[in-house]
Image 1 (cartoon, rainbow, N blue to C red):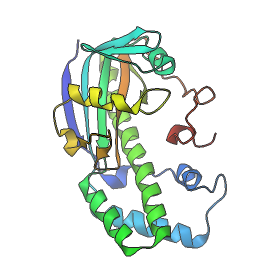
Image 2 (cartoon, rainbow, N blue to C red):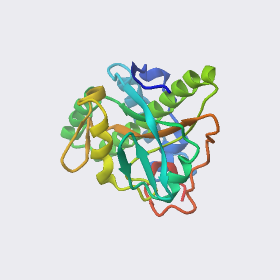
Image 3 (cartoon, one colour):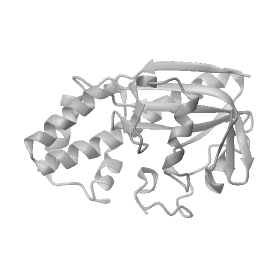
Image 4 (spheres, rainbow, N blue to C red):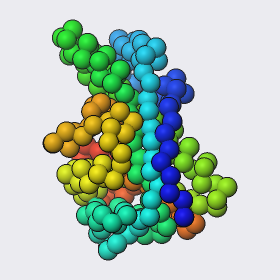
Length: 229
């Protein structure tokens, strides 16, 4: 059994910026935004690449589906709901991950907000959300490559707040991790700081399948995985 805690940094200019998801998140659907919006996106992404230092970590530990709507990680039981519990059913172990754009992004975002341009604020927030998910994608690729020589596979990633998994259980996940992991802190209201941060779980095992997200049965309307719904 693998039990390890891994840290690494991501070069922001290596993160894939999914422009289609960005435009959908911004409310443009399948349409291309106006030129002035595209110019703001390009300008902001170039600026972000000059200072942003994304950080990731993942802890691999014993875990798997506990009941049809629950997952057990080490000695902690999570009420994930049936969708996520089903995705964990072949797990031999579970990776708890964190990913963040870092405090540098928060400082830049605060500067944008102080300028009072609501269009730039909106673009900056949307861009940060998509880039944070891009960092998670890099992390997933990293874990997948590390598992290949061990003949192990990974699932998709799942986070508290999605698929009927209460955001309040975020504190239970963080209780298993070292404090201030990747520079992330959890507030009493279960908000992560820096604000553009993501955490969640990934199944690991010989028979694990990377199933598509079940957006057709999920009730969450503003999930970044489900923004076409």
